[in-house]
Length: 383
Image (cartoon, rainbow, N blue to C red; front, top):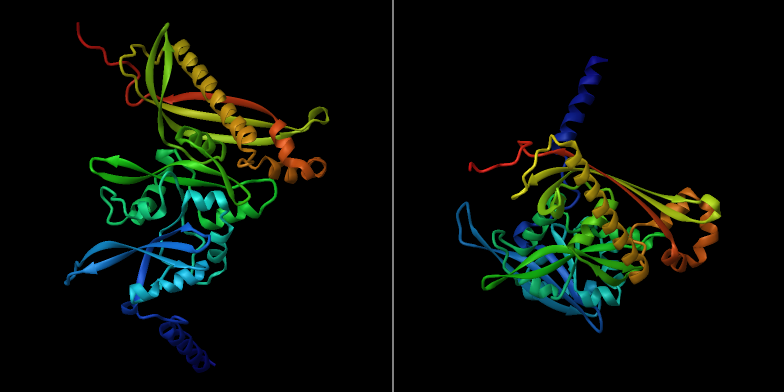
């Protein structure tokens, strides 16, 4: 019995040691795509890719990005066509970013994402962006200040969302999920080019708002910050607010410490409305010339009240813009009603777009100052 057990144990260990990949590709015959995007879909797909070319030898060869453009009648044909000028098999699973131009976004993203969802060698977890006031090719040909490639720069910046707070990161599968769902619309972060000396540098700032698969408008960085707050994303970014202290106004800098948001449908009296409850906690990171002590509870209470009024106004302006100007339900009000109030949803679902624009919104914001840096007193010069 022991001998039989030992035999099976040896076979099991050998099976683990000898296991390998179900398939393999020689790295020497592959060209790795770091980032790719679509500048046009009609009459031909214009595919832009950024790959890394290694030069030199030794243990630390130098690398530099190479941007290639190709055309094809479909996305997949453009992907295959790129193999010829590259001279190697193009490998997409390691791509760090996927971009589409504003033109493609406004005409409809379905042709640009259908192949990504269907193909076996594409990852739907790739971060997804829309370019603003520039093309995908111009973005890939720009010069990030520190990263070796634009794709690496954008992927690294996307990971810093909580501290920047000016965009909502999205992967391909997340946008497709919202595009196919009922009672919610999609949104994507935007890439822009800014001038730094003689070069143009890509930054991620703002949000492209969609209705189905078509882009219908933009949100700037401040509006995108509100969007992230209402989506419940953890924030640690900073902002400056003109704050009144003892009759004088000072530009005081605040930093998010904690944030929670609760959105829920209300059906009192038979009428549908939405309630938005937000609780925010802040650190005061810079007072400038303001001279007061945080031990004065009346001043702290006044600052908290001003912060609550400030974010209440910003949230209302944000919701009104998405509701009335864009007619886009990017907060997913309809989805919440469908899940929590199915009877009400059956009454509103046939003409939800019209009801969305007239939907009453009740906003309640509570703010607390919980930190004041490392001191509670101002810095007062000696007289």
